[in-house]
Length: 151
Image (tube, rainbow, N blue to C red; front, side, top):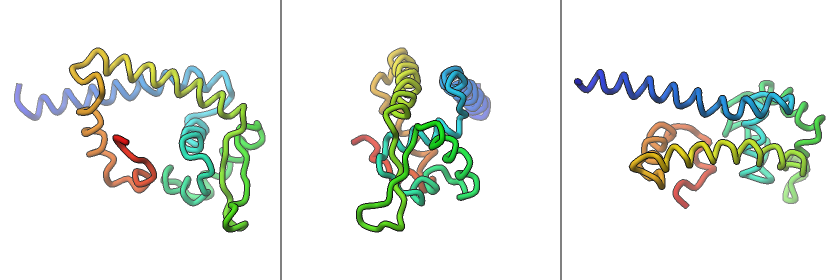
């Protein structure tokens, strides 16, 4: 097999892996009446409590208009609260409520179990090589600066 064929196979595998990964969450988010967009918001707020609105916009790489409706829906469902920053009352910070944290934990645990099982079945059980590949893909994303990889 030549290099191009191997890369084409890896691209196909990456696609199929991604589809499987998001299907796990999709099955769970449907029962809570939320979408993938809501799930992404819950994930980033859960892992960056007190995140500022502008930081969330950077992480998700969306406009204020694109974030407005799903964020409003999460607030209406009682999954997220918005509070003014302690340092500057004009800045709004986001936090999960107890209900939001429960949903995010349920979704996150399912995906973490799935990722751990895939890594355990590989020659890279700690995911060090996988992390390096992902870092190369993510290195140009502005939101990466908010996460300490390998810490």
